[in-house]
Length: 245
Image 1 (tube, rainbow, N blue to C red):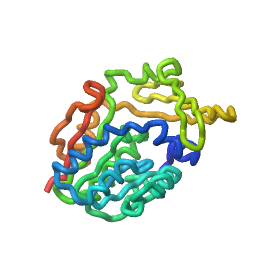
Image 2 (image 1 turned 90 degrees about the horizontal axis):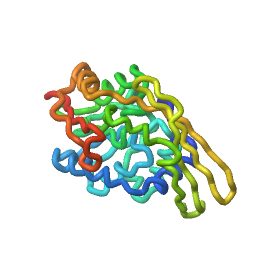
Image 3 (image 1 turned 30 degrees about the vertical axis):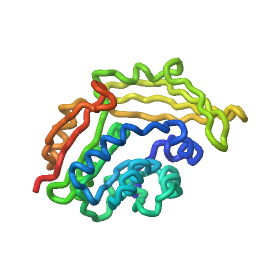
């Protein structure tokens, strides 16, 4: 059974706005380079969302499985050019079908959306089972020390984007609660033409580097390296782990 999906990704109207409101996905080039360097042929994209990264890999001839608990986001992914070349599965990593892949990825800080400890542990177990011996897991997560959420307010995030077929869309985010490692915020979208407003609440977990490394080790991974994110230096950790031979 698929896990709970964030309303921002499960609501069809909001899912359809994800790409237009965030068109610059240069952050994914790093992951494409990783797949090439590792000579990966079979890739599992966990939390694939609207499928941008999965399709980038499929365009390069890789066999890609994209999984996500948000059906609306997967609907967007399937309708994109080349969508038929990716195996899309409506689930989370705790309920993966049997597979063997060379590389598993979690891009765009997907890890932080897994706030429940049992779900996080189940995700690590599920991915470990899906990896071939020697296969790699690569993902990113924000460094809590940078306190990124302090910039998540209307003054800093407000913008207006003109979306084809929709018109001007006004959007911003506001933090509503910070409780230890959990940060909750509300995203607001206003369709300017009609004045209609949609909101969605999200919670992210900010894990310390040592915590993530310990979790990986406890679930049978070898942590090869923790890098700085090249496109966001000093703001994120990029973890390189693998299932031992």
